[in-house]
Image (cartoon, rainbow, N blue to C red; front, side, top):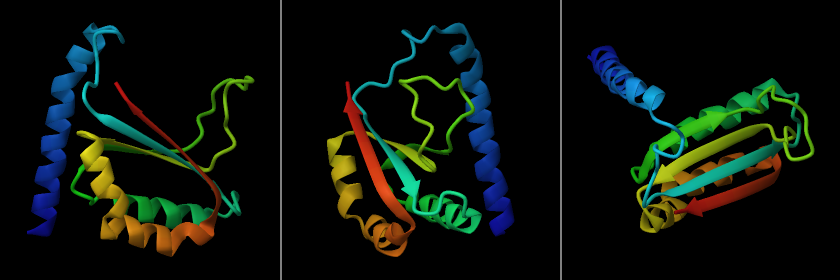
Length: 136
């Protein structure tokens, strides 16, 4: 039963995304806007950046963190292989971007037991964290 629910969730998400792709391909960047939301982007520098077990532990913990109910959208990522320029920082290990409906959603997230547990159980992995929050 769990596999069926998982499949149905993934199928629904895929269908929703497929429905958005034609709009995204036809719209310019100026036409696609996220309004009223708070975007929370977190960059982690691991103490041992080449330690794949530590990276996996952090990514697994970030996936659990996404269960906080005020998170609307999310992305877990790694430095891209883009051109090295003065304005591009490829030095971080893992990034997390989450989108909340508003400031209240982000405030709830900050004190949520899942978030507090994430920090408590994983902060030994990183030596630096930088957060960028933005609103429109």
